[in-house]
Amino acid sequence: MKRFQQWIHKIRPGENARPLTRTWGAGSGSRRFQWPAARQWGGLFQIFSRTERRFFWGLVLIFVISLSTLGVRLYQRSTVLIPEAGGEYVEGVVGNPTYINPVLAQSNDADLDISRLVFSGLFTHDAAGETVPDMATGYELSEDQKVYTIHLREGITWHDGQPLTSNDVLSTIGFIQDSTIKSPLAGNLRGVTASAPDDLTVVLTLTEPFAPFLSSLTFGILPAHIWNEIPLQSFHLAETNLKPIGTGAYKFHELKKDRRGNIKSYTLVRNEGFYDRAAYIKKITFKFYPDLESLVEAGRKKQVEGLGYVPKESKESLAKNKQIINRLLRLPQYTAVFLNQKNTLLSKPEVKQALAHSINKQGVIDEVLNGEGEAIDGPILPGYVGYNPEIRKYEFDPVRAMEILDEAGWTMAEGEELRTKDGQELQFTLTTIDQPDFVASANMLKDFWQKIGVGVVIQIIDPNRIQRYVIKPRDFEALLVGEIVGTDPDPYPFWHSSQGRDPGLNLSVFVNKDVDQLLEEARKITDLEQRRIKYLHFQNIIADELPALFLYNPTYTYGLPEKIQGFEQERITVPSDRFVNITNWYINTKRVRE
Image (cartoon, rainbow, N blue to C red; front, side, top):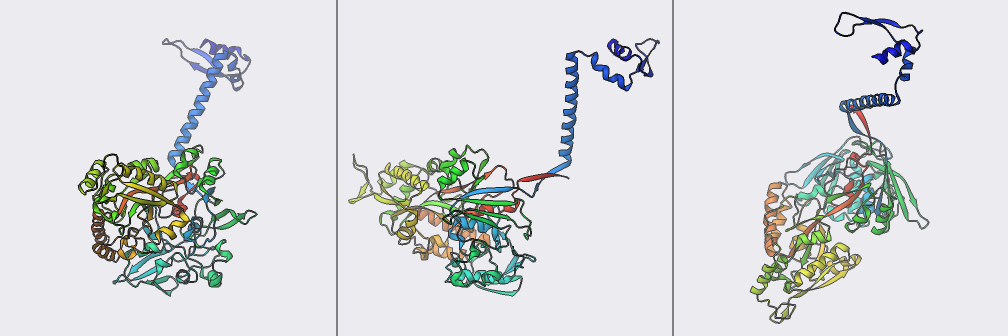
């Protein structure tokens, strides 16, 4: 108080001050003093020591920070953060675009990636892999389950402003079915007839019921007003294959080529008039690389923000780029050893059971896939109709494997490495693709089987040759490959006896009348519970007969930058499915009041 009075009376004593009465202490006496005038306040710091002045300003700073923090918290509590349009994204992929055309794109991942963003289909797959309407609003199925009446959304326009009609759907189906064009999708629509009673209705008629049919209608639709003007013999040469017009969430902006004519980058911009909701991200650019090594190097040097695929063996080196987050996606694919049932040795039950018991599946997953996969025991994957977790399993038990072979008369003399029976050696050739995962898996299998006295010769085939020279003629004893089963687990193409020859996918050349009947009936039933029951019986037969040794369900690693929010995909059928919910992705945000 004394120093306060000194300030009042000694600092500018001639200044006028406002009189103020205060009572000090408990007594009745009172002292009068003057309240400082505005100019007198400026002299306050003259009576403060240096330490006191620092303390004072510290208190002021704390007060300001506290007030600001309180204001920010009140603002955050009264508002919510929502996506805002804007931002750009650059992704690196392997390959080069050739046909940004859904009728032709199926054999090129780069084409499929861009086509997924530029074009829309009647149906699509949601984040969980379920088939849901896209440009269709719904459908009706006839009582005989052969006629699908599909209704189109109103108001959909092409990127050039023209309206979408049922004629566009009919034209696209016609292109797919035309033998001149040789579309990879032709098999999906074989025998299907299409008609259009009006501009917003399409009627598709099948020759027989086929429950998974809707899942085959996710291909993009082409604009009839453009493609009907192009002669069929020029279909593959049209400039529109690289500068497409679609109805998708993104539209063509520009492409850049090098001096050799190779496309180095391809840029899309968001479609402001998209029929559902315009995407948030303003621009997406793809950069193309000749191989995975170049792609990963671009990721390490931050020449791209994301990678369309991250090889498992490259994750550690790519980890230097902290901005990329690896997203693991489940694939409708399994890796298995298909045992050719025309081979006398590999059709023997005791041999198949012993081979199955001697495989350490989790060891393969940990060693080859860095733990990113799931051990499987049958041809229907977890999460799909008919999956049976209680299917018969052949647990890793090398001792039991050797007992089975001993009991069947396959013996191994002292000092020998191979078992024999009636003069025949227990040995076969394991063929696989020249890709890191498959080669590493094959070598591990060889080690497992050699430990129980089974000889294995590994044959590695170039990926470009395996279809023509191995799979098509079924020229193998045991084949280690992966099979993509699609979004609907229709096992018919993979296990029906009629599919034992090319182009069928029954790689084990497996024949079983009961399996044939179950698969024929199941694909005609739309009731999921009835299909499930038939698939349970089918799996039990496969587990008993063992025409294949099922190993694992791998995952797909997508390198997406941390700045991208809204990615919700859980599983994909093909790599381009990572863009299924592209309109929900966002980079920029803003706050709005609740």
